[in-house]
Amino acid sequence: MTGQPADPHAVIAFLSLLAFHVAHILEEILGGFVVLHRLGLVPFAVLNWILFCIPVVLFYFWLVGRRWARRASVLYAGVMVLNGLGHNLLTLATGRYIDGYAGGFSGIGLAVSGIVLARSLLREDHGRAARP
Image (cartoon, rainbow, N blue to C red):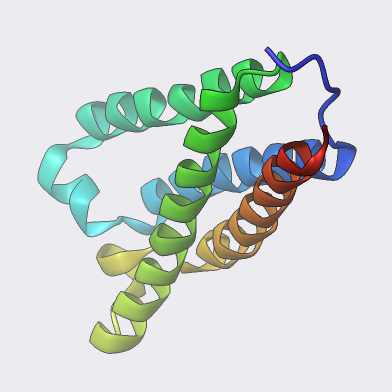
């Protein structure tokens, strides 16, 4: 544990990314994301619930100062950036949003807030390393 309080900007960025993550799951369900059709609603919802709980746990452990959680959260942010960009690129490439690659609108929020969170966490990590 570091004992350092979390950067308020990073907290807002993390909460923003979590909110976009929930919006993204809902957009995938409402838009008929292609994976939803292959898995079915219940398995898709359960899988996404598990995948959402992981960053919530990371958020908690990052708040209490666990270094591993900060590093894992940077990874989470990066995956969400790729997720958001991927939905948009696949929608553009295929021309299919409904019953295709739904998730692009919230994907923009995932990409932006993911970049902001990753930068905040990396800056926080760099700032702690520079202190005596």
